[in-house]
Image (cartoon, rainbow, N blue to C red; front, side):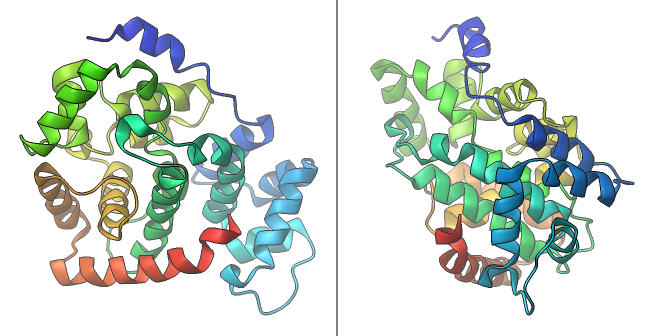
Length: 278
């Protein structure tokens, strides 16, 4: 059994996000966010400005004319994508490492996170549920708790977790909750709090496996994105218990199984097109 106090303490050891990124996150999630403020935050961070302009002028942004200013980039890309690009650059190093405790080789967690974020964009216009602006970022960060929890998974704990998944059909979240008394979503929420990210993102990470516990759109969106990313071959494979999560998300967002297949195909195409740009 792991010491929960140690896990809580360890969640604050990941390198903090740049102040400009946390400020940007707090602005983006506001319903009446001021685009001038968002532009100002980006403009005063030279490295962030360079990343945003580079992305705005990439093929992935479908830019038809050169984007030469931050305000143009914000209008062209939208605040959700802007925030995703900013946070992706900040966490890429940590997410690229191998996590053998979860059966993930180098780069696999990163690819799964990117695929999840890209899936969110596919949902827009295909569901009557409003997709929150912060959905991209929350999907990108939904598994950040694994970077902390992996430090506490001793061989005996790993063996029991694998048995619960492979032989018992449990999901990662179920196995962690039953055997460790904490799961990676909860730990990820602690990391997001440490990074001073908005409460909506914190809750989206915590409840991305159990959105019914708070019945808000964001955790369901991330739950669906996670299922799509798994289905197209990034991250851990689907367990028997994951099928229940998938159906829950489908029902909430009003998708059919045929819709899910089309979303997976579109996400896969998008992923193959843009993964190198991150």
